[in-house]
Length: 223
Ligand code: AMP
Image 1 (cartoon, rainbow, N blue to C red):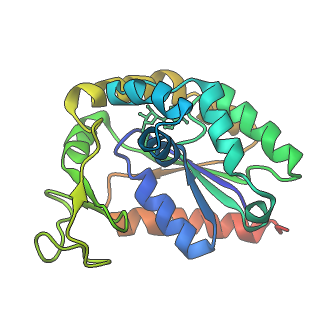
Image 2: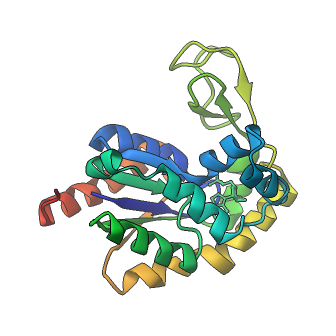
């Protein structure tokens, strides 16, 4: 089964994608993570993306499509993917359809996280992750049980994203409404979209998402 999860910045895509991947044995592919890796490795794509990302803009479609295509191997295709933060434009959605077609597979479900812009800025500015295992935390909503120690792996180093500042967040929201929200209409024509409110707690959102995944799994058989 192949799933796309999308929603505005701060809606919890990454967290939910990770939970769904663990629950259903899917490979999580986050273009945000792939781009951050490329930036850290100072590849050509990373050097091109770095400034755009810090300013909250969208990296050009060709660059992101190429980075993603590189990561889709035949072995992983058999397990199924959850695409997190990709596609972010209708052009990317078309490119993904074509790519999956060459692997004789397709998107089976599109999960849309719905949340008001007003809630998002607070959510994003307080978030940080464990450097060792990537577990996500928040200054207000999800503090580590012991201050300074990761609940999951015991790590003691945390990091914040350079684009989690108010100016970049406004740009990211604009990019979302202008370029990404229209992918709902693109997938709607195939009846693949299921909306879930993302304003609830992580566990409740996860429960709602899981219900849609199970329904999808029961309504079709996947290779
Ligand atoms: P994310 O981790 O998904 O919030 O992505 C962080 C940043 O990476 C975004 O604000 C964009 O600058 C860039 N990015 C990630 N995915 C894409 C994509 N599919 N298309 C264009 N830019 C992307």
